[in-house]
Length: 280
Image 1 (cartoon, rainbow, N blue to C red):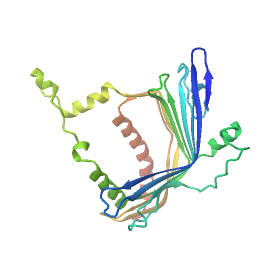
Image 2 (image 1 turned 180 degrees about the vertical axis):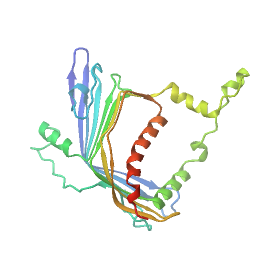
Image 3 (image 1 turned 90 degrees about the horizontal axis):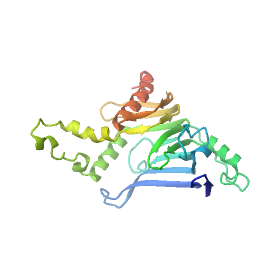
Image 4 (image 1 turned 135 degrees about the vertical axis):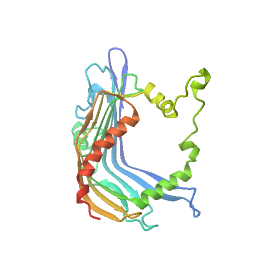
């Protein structure tokens, strides 16, 4: 952990390294035999780096002139895997949902090649990482100005019966009233004017407080996708290569819904391009 002196104040910088971390999602409600693990996310060699943006890596922190003492947050992950923990308990097809395309033997951290003490080891580690995420915060540190994301070629395994099962479980956890809350009183009723449509009322907060980003960059993505669908029509597609081009937008002043729509259209084009090669 370091403190960088500036002309007016001090900036905090720290670097955290984890050899391995794991997060699991368990079902403690519907299972009569006790807690049942559903999903497990495992990351190996995780680096969290925070520093003033002017000191960050130019490859990840897209610092714009005039940003002042912005803060750069970097997350680097050498390996990541999402496991289907129900594979041995049910007749699902895929034990793994997401992983790196080519498994790589991760070198051990030593005193001579430690990213916390060696700048060269740090740069080599960043270059070898499977996943990289960079966030540039504003001077106050309350909002994100820029976001960059990069992931190396991966494998994705999807099965409709598993997705439907997880979706059904989540609906048992969350009441319907929480998912679709009843709208409050219509403000126009107090003034005797025409009623404002409910859809307009729900859109007002997003328009008053839009999503602002100076720049959003998602590097090109290559994925080998395996899909098994059997609820209505059996479809099997194993290791179908999908390639998605660079997504680079900015500056942005939009709503979350519009941004999700733009991302969906961008990546749907890459998926539909290979749809004709899937075998039924």
